[in-house]
Length: 73
Image 1 (cartoon, rainbow, N blue to C red):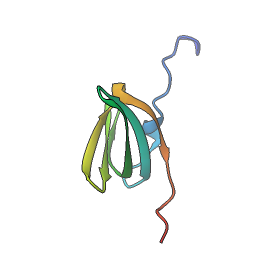
Image 2: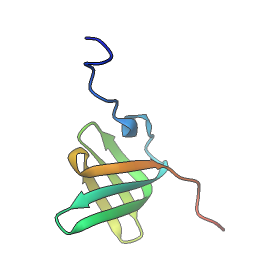
Image 3: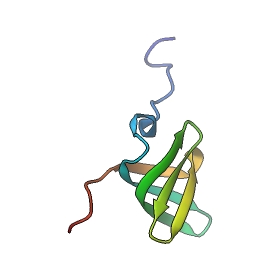
Image 4: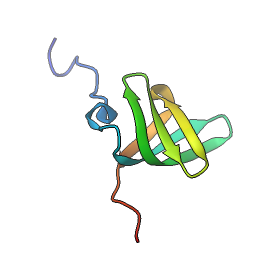
């Protein structure tokens, strides 16, 4: 398979459990953000522990995401 035919990389597969991340995802009512500690990472979804609780974000709902630095002291 050539690089032109290869599906795009799943960037969250490079994240590690324990990383602090922010994931923007789309639901029927609009865009949402999950900011917190990464609890689980799989090709089909990630789970982020936010201040409001654990949020499972399916891959098909993800718009963008990245690692972020620790919160200010």
